Length: 128
Image: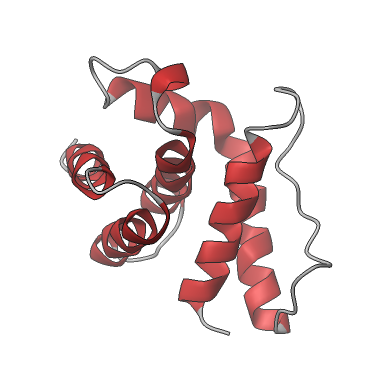
């Protein structure tokens, strides 16, 4: 598996979390998918980091989505943003890779207009 597929799996876990109780951590149950050990480690790194920095990540998104209430952002887009903001702020993945991967996820899973919204928010965060 690749980092791209691992990132996609982590996105699915983040999206799933939005349908659980607010005070629960992101699920890390990966029994339903076969991952190479390196890929599993990467997913665990992403989800663990998001769990650890969730409030800061959400604050960053809130600050950079002026005119949008977090509760009103399409949950798929929000999950993509959470994953991307973690990587931008707390990981060493190149910024252009993070943005490209986020746009690809939005084109695959979200609406036709979502990728430009996500690109705009992430560009604003990178330029802070």
